[in-house]
Image 1 (cartoon, one colour):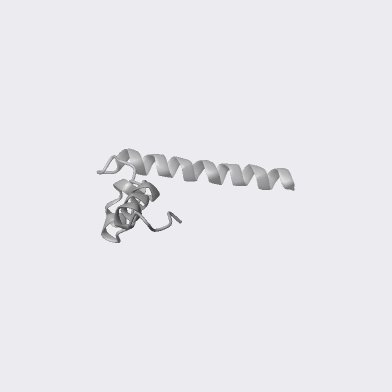
Image 2 (cartoon, rainbow, N blue to C red; image 1 turned 90 degrees about the vertical axis):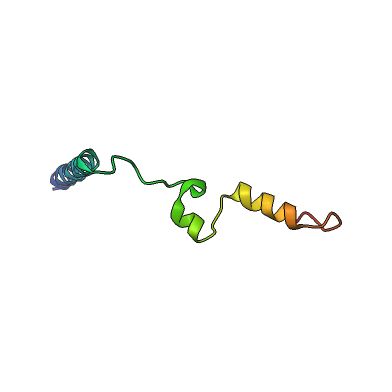
Length: 69
């Protein structure tokens, strides 16, 4: 019984991977979506930056006598 479930789930997983591969291969974009925060246009629209950029902005706006924390 358990062997049947594992076999069926592996076949289903194979179809899913095959479907994703076909979709990427025949897609007009031919590119993966940008997931990095600094390169994603939707994140830029919402003013969400990478932690390194946020740290630079915070340090730029702080006065020298203020605590770094």
